[in-house]
Amino acid sequence: MLLAKQKIRKFQILLIGVLGAILFIAPFIGGLVIQNIYVLNGEYHFTKGSVFDAFAATLLLLILAIIFILIKQVKQTKGIENIQFKYVLAGISAFAFISLLFGLVLPFFGYESIVAYDAQSSVFWVALTSIAIIRHKLLDIRFILTRSLLYAITVSIVAFTFTSV
Image (cartoon, one colour):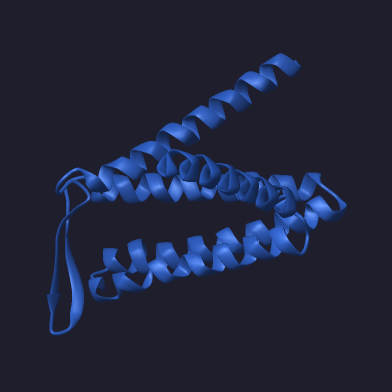
C-alpha cells in the first residue's frame, strides 16, 4: 500500500513538473500564447495566440492543484508546520486569485488593458512566504545564509588567488 502511494506521489510530482516546464517554455515560443503586445491610448493590449486558451486552462489547473495540495497539508499538520503552510497557502491563493483575475478572466471578457497589473500579485506570495520563512522558520535561513556566505568567501579567495598570480 505504501509503495502505491509513493508511486502516485512520484507521478503527481512528475506531472506538475512537466506541466510547469511546458508553462515556462510555451510563452517563449513565438506567438503561441500571445501573438502581439501593443500600446493603444496609453493602455496595454494583446492579441491571443493559438494556444492561449489551452495555456490558461493548464495554468489554472496547475495553480488549483498546488492550492489543493497545500490545503491538504494544512489539514494534516499541527503546530508550527500548520502555521507555515497557512502562510504559504494564503500567499499563493492571493497571488493566484489576482493573477488569474487580471491575466485570464478579465482579458477573456475583453478587458485586455489591465493585464499589466497581474504581475504585481506575486508580491503577496513573496511577502507571506517570507513571513513563514523568517518568523516561523519555514526554512533554516541562518543555515542558508551561513552556507551562502562561506561559499562567497571561498569563491572570492580562489578568484583572488588566481588573479593575483
